[in-house]
Image 1 (cartoon, one colour):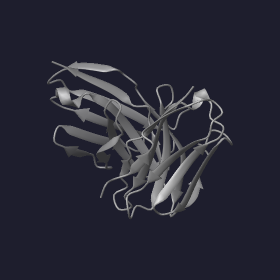
Image 2 (tube, helix red, strand yellow; image 1 turned 90 degrees about the vertical axis):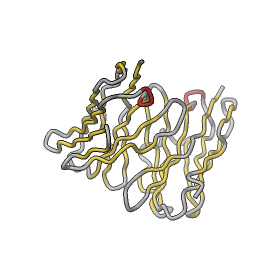
Image 3 (cartoon, chains in turn yellow, green; image 1 turned 135 degrees about the horizontal axis):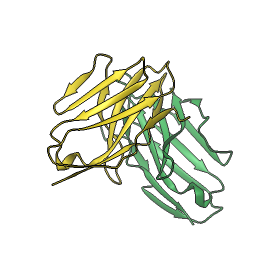
Image 4 (cartoon, chains in turn blue, green; image 1 turned 30 degrees about the vertical axis):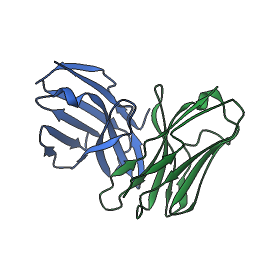
Length: 108
Length: 113
C-alpha cells in the first residue's frame, strides 16, 4: 500500500463548480499535512497547510481527519486558472511524502 | 533570495554515461530533499539531508545513484552509469524550518537514450 494515496482523476468541471479532492495516508504518526499545486511542466508550490481544526483560504478549504487518516481539499467557485495537478503531502519528522496528484481541468 | 537553483535544466545523455545534477538551496534552510518525478510513479522521495547529513536514502533506487551535500550551499545527485529508465524530472527542494513549507527548484529534466 502506498503511503499517500489520491484519486488521480482527472476531474473536468465547468467554471463556478465546487470540486473536492481526498487523500488518505497510511502512517498514523504523521505530523503535518499540506496541499501543493503543480502546473504543467513546473515545480510544485505550496497551496496551503492543513490544520487539525480545518482551515480556509479564500475559495479553498482544507480538512484533516486524523481518526480516518485522510485530508481533503475543497475548491469553491472554480476558475479556469485553478486547472492544475493538486498534490497532498504528509510529513513525519521531515520525511515529506507526496501523493501521485489529482489533475483538475476547469472548462469555460 | 533567488530560491532553489538547479542545474542543468535539461540534459540528454546516452546510456552508460555519468550524470551529475546540482542544487543550491535557499540560504538558512537546513533540510534538503531530492525527488524524482515520472508520469508512472509520480513524485518519489529519493533522499533527504538535515544539516548536510543524509537522514534517509531508502528511496534511492540502487547503487547507481548517489547524493552528497558537502556544505550548506550545495548538493549533488549522481547517476553512474545512467540507464533509459532513469529518464525523469529530478527536483531539489529545501524546507523552511519554521513553517515546514518545501520550496522546489525548477527541476532538471533528464533524458537517457
